[in-house]
Length: 219
Image (cartoon, rainbow, N blue to C red):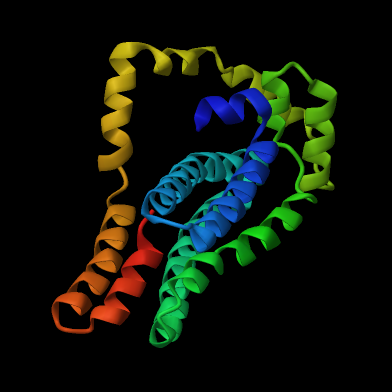
């Protein structure tokens, strides 16, 4: 996901992610048989994985330093809230046994997010990485009005991006891949608990509700 957002920008990457959410959710809802459903769920899982990389980068690069930490925490909180809301909706619809409706409803918030992203500006870091200093200045003036953008532009340029290219080297790529899964215990714990709930429900005899919740929670 990182190389994609570096190539086409954070904003466009997030818009494509939202489109992917909508498309794969609809494909899940209309899947005619098992393998097409599996392929749609796999595509949705890839989309979710990319979003976990791109969105935090966008927040960190676009927000002023005085609110950056709070916005990053807010992203984590809203992610968990969204997962819980999805399970509550699936639980409410479980009695209908309409798994297609449960999977397809995920397209609604994704479509709303897509239209909200149309008003988002690209991050100044990406503009500077592409050598577009004027666009970076305009981006900073929009997200942080009333502050001179030049000092922050100077800090970003002083930091540079060349040293991050080394992260793509084979030795560090393996370490980075391992760290990607092990370095986010909160997300792992959340997913483990939420995926465990429908499994326990199914094992205890609530087969219909458990199956519906499990289908809604798989990536």
